[in-house]
Image (cartoon, rainbow, N blue to C red; front, side):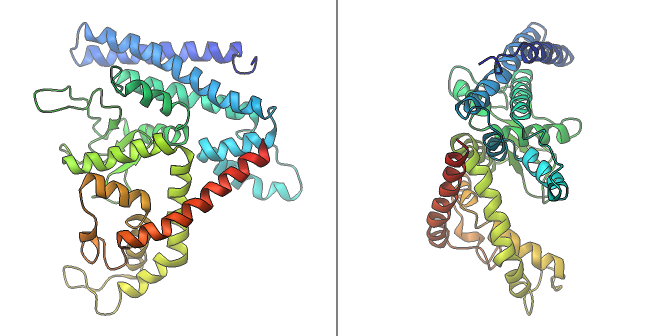
Length: 347
């Protein structure tokens, strides 16, 4: 327990909380909010500190159960801090041949500190932007964001760092029938980073490019908010299985099928043939993205339909709902089995 409540970590959290509170105060003053600026000040102060502390307690507690061994730290990094895991995996490939690589980000101390910083950042942006609705699901959303959903929160933090200076952060208060963007338990950027110009991107509790220059449709907002709660409910299973589906189906089927399905007589709307790379990307989009079980779920809940994408917006390779379900059941059983096996082996 001494490692969890380390004095240096608590001091860092207090410093970060103070910085966040000042940012919240300045933001409120620049928006002309007067007394409400103090709400941003105190909320950012408290939620930043608690976010970092709860995240450190969650990850630190799991490490304590495994006697702080390196295997457990490695598994936790893959489960909850995927960018760190990938980064150190790449670094370790060559040095590991002669045994000279020493883990840092994936070490027990590295994992605890990553949890502390991501939890604090998640709390900071939540407090500064008045994100959580504390009288309803806000408490649940916050606690999940800084514990079980930390992988998404890490990706969300990276998205904030990319978007915050230019992507038009939505911060409208509720007014009449307009629910606004405050206290909705998520963040939204009207512009921002996305993999395709006309697509939104949701990582953790943050929506990016949703939607350029105007408010999103109800269906789009519900679709993206479904991803927010998928991450909170399923934690590392959501992130890892989503990415694995995207990569595996694209490599094994989507990209190659796209070469065929978008070739031959099939033409773009302007009548021109599909270039080689566009055929590959479209095949990957149809199979890896639009046929991804998590996306099929979000389209059903958000837009209320999915089948019209087949042969239209999504192209000829989008799987029917029944096919998605048929493949999803064994797929998730395999992924869950592998995750349980990794946890058991490390603990």
